[in-house]
Amino acid sequence: MSSNIESTNPNLNSRLTSEGCSVLLDINDGDRLVFARLAAAAKLKIGNKSCSLQPLIGCSYGSLFQVETGPDGSLLARVTPAVQGNITEEKRDNQLNVESRDNRTLIDNNKAQSLTGEDIQAMKSQGARGDEIIEALIANSATFEKKTSFSQEKYRLRKQKKYAPKVLLRRPVARSICEAYFRKYPAKIRFLRMDTLSLLLSMANVSCHSDILVVDMVGGLLTGSVAERLGGTGFVCNSYLGTAPYSMDIVRIFNFSDEICKRIVRSPISDLLIQKESPEQIIHHDDVCNMESLTNNQVSTSVRVDEISDPSGSEISEQGAENVENINIPAIRVSKSTKAGERAQQETINLWKENGFSSLIIAAPDLDTWTLVRDLLPLLSNSAPFAIYHQYLQPLATCMHNLQVGKMAIGLQITEPWLREYQVLPSRTHPCMQMSAFGGYILSGTKICSS
Image 1 (cartoon, rainbow, N blue to C red):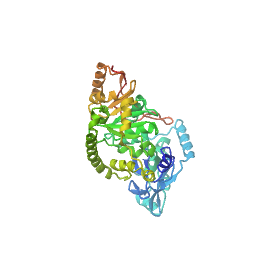
Image 2 (image 1 turned 45 degrees about the horizontal axis):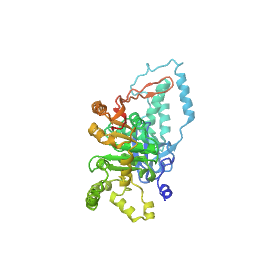
Image 3 (image 1 turned 120 degrees about the vertical axis):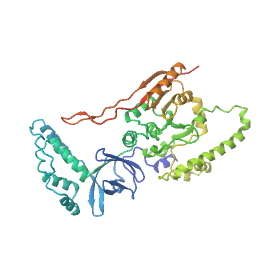
Image 4 (image 1 turned 135 degrees about the horizontal axis):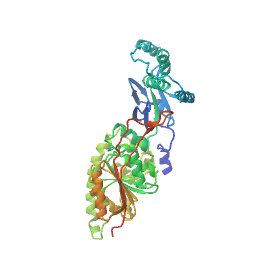
């Protein structure tokens, strides 16, 4: 039955897009990053043009598209990057060292271009492509030939972004999603940078067949990254305080299959900390079950409101999932997609209490770090690693001091990630002018037996 379930869902390793999957659209080489769900009726606005996303369905990731004008309006046409153009650019860059011309004699008085706006509009009305307009602008420029090769390429790229925008179809993985959110909505992921995320996964030793305990208050980015690295093995337990789970909206962007979604579960921290029932407590088992059923009904009611507002419409409520399992009809289970973040079963929680988790990752800057670590660290198995992210240093320093005093962990260290991006081009390799100098802090260590 598992093979049937996997065949009805998009595969994480699929190289082709399908209708309903999420993609990352890179417009004009990073000028704008957009997450979109592919559908026949979906549209994307680029500048003042609205283009349908229908041509993107069934294409391989990494495909390049260009906005062109068709008989029914603007559309995205697939283009192939010209290798000859790259060779020509390298020749121009090599000539840059031997040429003596520069831009000192050029005067920017808006008189170098003889092609007017009315002429460009007339070309558009006649169905001229963006590349044809760019070549016409270059041919009618009085100063283009006097510019250096570097200036000519910048001029061509500037006109291409205006008259012939290009869209790169990227796969939404942990790196690309983190980069896009860090650039667009850094506060939603608590300013978690790409290198910091990779360092968290490395220090926590996230590997196959591991059971990872996660406290994720960065929109689900950490949970999705751990599940992606596990690859359908082990479990990711997203824990939370109280009765309302934290948001996991970003997990939907990963295009996980049902097999991987089944490995992403949720559990309140209170359930993980409750000890096993003693023989005296078994007498009152019926009363406890009645209270738990009443509490679960209240929680599922509050969760169902959030799930109804989900635009994907593919998720089902927790109570509905339990009813499907009780009915035990294989045909129904195959037809419904598995929801990521279902409540962990009691049998699995009991195994975690007995054997412990493989590692712990915390990204919850809004909570008290030391209190959270003090409660969750006993849930780990001995010699299990842990990694904690925070925007500021002081909460991690306090937590590190308390762990040292309590002799609860060894190998404690606080790391400040730092990343510098370089522009690597012939004859002009240098660090990028605009970069983020802050990547937060990570406290890492290894849990030891306290007895």
